[in-house]
Length: 337
Picture 1 (cartoon, rainbow, N blue to C red):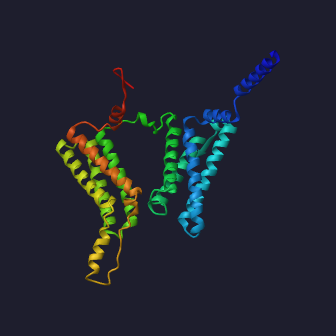
Picture 2: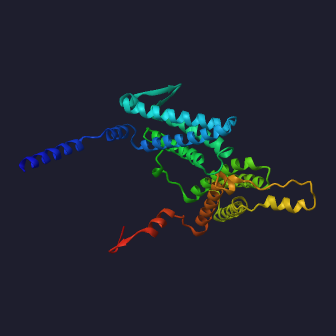
Picture 3: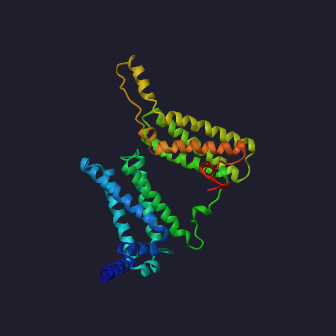
């Protein structure tokens, strides 16, 4: 019996010793975190986005081998995947050299992280512009989501790579504060730009031309309002009028662009009765009616317009973060959890 207890104790001791040793996986994670810090999750997301886009683009390339946009998606994903793996491997195996090495271009000096982040932001930004505004990934799909996840991850890694640099123009998002009206105008300007580029592929429809006109008007009005606010030349009445006008045009945009009205089809069908030579055209504005860039930007523009007019008429900004927190907070013994 004592011998059995001794054997059990030895086994437990061996197990404890074995469990106390860091595993290969935990050691690798620790090394990666030490080198890349808070940027590691963004790099891992880049890996996932690159892989997902590569798989989907290769499947499509097998079906349409002559499509230049799909071939670009394949090349883009492979290059991104290879560079990210190489970047992570170099940082893990040579952390000292990784931290100290710089890349000199004329009068500019970049760290390894900054150079990688700059290229990836450009690379994924180019891919997002070509592949989601034109073709073939204009509506939500695995490739569409992967492209935008990759671009946002690269952009966030870029911000992190420069936020620690002295005198950098990049700052962490928590340090950036803007006036509520200015923030709403930023949203309107960004939405106008996205709707403009999304509409370029649908100019054969009157709704596409409508989207183009709305985006130009909104961009001009939002930009002018922002300029006048910065110069403090805008009266309260003028600001309210501008906010009301922007809300009206974006409400119309939401109605005509994001609801599948089939207005082109209805018009052509009624006209076909009078003239048999008319060709039936349906309104296939998928980027606006099926959740693409145009759809998301149109609703973002409407929300920004509502936030702008709310701030101007009510006098306080919309604080969704606080409202959401208060709505779902749990009160326990008089306290809030």
